[in-house]
Image (cartoon, rainbow, N blue to C red; front, side, top):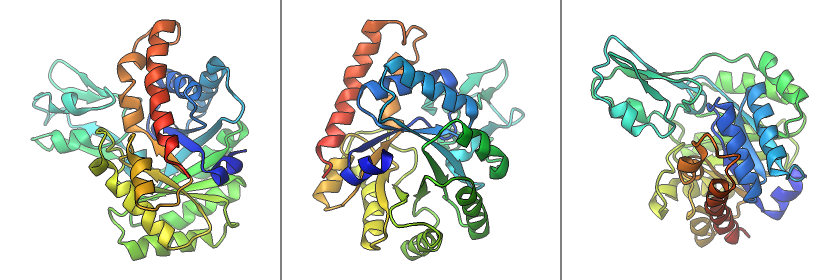
Length: 322
């Protein structure tokens, strides 16, 4: 069971992307990383994406001890937002196209456009645009309608992204999630808009309704920033985890946000008692050139090349878990 893996501190979670609605890519990623030893998969909260992940597990032939999590969030959280390009303002300079890690920017005759299926809301295009013609937008999500069909499909966890200051929305959606699902829940939280005290205060309030060790705290350092493989990139993930650890909460701690192959090593060096690691941007980037091929799932040679890379990441991450 997932709880057993968390207790044993043996969890590697692949973040396919809360906003990643590309079913074919998700199927490929899950098939690949399941074979590589990944036990936990974070998915967009869409029934078709859960189905795609299950197809990936079937392709890998490893469905036992593999667990699926869907991500939902409050408005304004980048994980559940999409970029939008104002076509009238776009000068077609191409900077958004160059920096997008998901190839979600498509070229039109007079401007660029966002493919919402592939966009994960990382905001790199917003930062790169010199003409301020790109913004990220998140739509209101009615969890009472969204969650039931996902739960019916047999998910193992729901992750709640709370990167924002709207405490009323946090409490309302958290209540909806708890009413809908009696399994393990995950709270993804970072310090971008909350100081350390507010962060812990929010967590304590949310945990009042939860049994001890029925909740994962995903300590998000710098969300969707793990494109480099060094200690500096992953430093904030470890620092955020330390804040949660020092609060002595009855939870499982997951390292996230800017995670890479050095994360668990740094966490061990810093004395962080963590239960798992969630890797998204970096895990997807290192196999991207293989996964984007149409023949990825049928070309054994190509698949195996990617598999060796994925295995090395999982193995290196697991070596430094307690």
